[in-house]
Image (cartoon, rainbow, N blue to C red):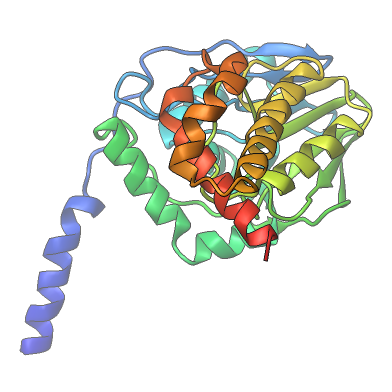
Length: 317
């Protein structure tokens, strides 16, 4: 009897989550832009998830191949994923045959759900450490983050984990395209992959770069992120697609690289003067004026200085 009551209590407590209604679709669509022949990017709004953007703020992309469509970073929710699929259908009637998730942060991949519901059995590629993190609960944590930040606008989204691990220098051949995986250890996170399309000279950077928007570095490494961006710039790519912000030429990678370098080098120099991290920020701000208009600069520059301080300190011992 006690067991039955306990089970009933669990079911009652779980009911609001299980029976929560799916939130409405996005209030607007975002037309894709062709950055190379057959390669399209939907540039999301800049900023953090909010009720206003309904959680959409990354750059979903898709490649139309002979075999079908390949999606990179479908977005943060089932609602975003459905919008992305609607925009794909305006370009081609081909099915989605593969997805690449660039890293574990859920604003880039929780829309896997929409892709799988429309195309069951699709392969979803990601780094093994991302697959491991999701199995350990990272997806559920991101569901909660997205619900909270958007005040429920992503409700109805569930975790659909990647199912196909890929390592550095893996080549995935799909419909006449080579999707080459680049992974350089810990960069924005330790789960990052960049995807190079050699035939089109396009590289998808994930959150190893933002362009016009600052990115959190809590899970990353300044030196590792710099190393990844140098590798991207040496890849032969001519079109660079950042995780957030406008796609473009090399500047879509070099602008963020230069910022990371300026923060790290500035902190390292002041560390040698025995300054604390809170003493460093006012001294560094004039040197970072080039990026002061970037979205979230004021909110994140302090944490960037503190995180760089910890990394410089660790490197010193």
